[in-house]
Length: 151
Image (cartoon, rainbow, N blue to C red; front, side, top):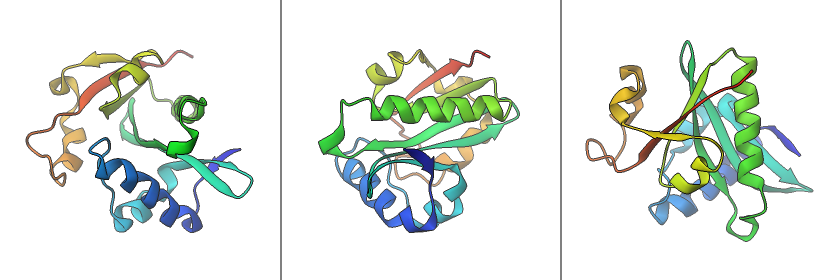
């Protein structure tokens, strides 16, 4: 079952994201940041266990970002990440967004879902506001990818 995240999920979400952040595969998120953006997050839950997490963040009038996408290591390659992205894309459509992008190290995964690699400079300046807080700024090595949503 995929559902909106609740405050009770935040600790599990942070631990899941930290696992991949420690490996350099995902950017870390503070508890404060997770609580501030709680409404952006969804989780995939099976029985009482959260197996995966993702978020859709609205950036501009026609643009959203899929971020903090992570699946527990024991449950990768089972389609959970694809399901989470699909739910985020559907939510983006409901909100009237025309495009979604991601900054990722998982280029092959997102390419398989129809995302195209772009130069980061093609993204609006508003996107970079959060980048100023990042430990990798200004030497970001993430790959920018974008998808035009079909209605």
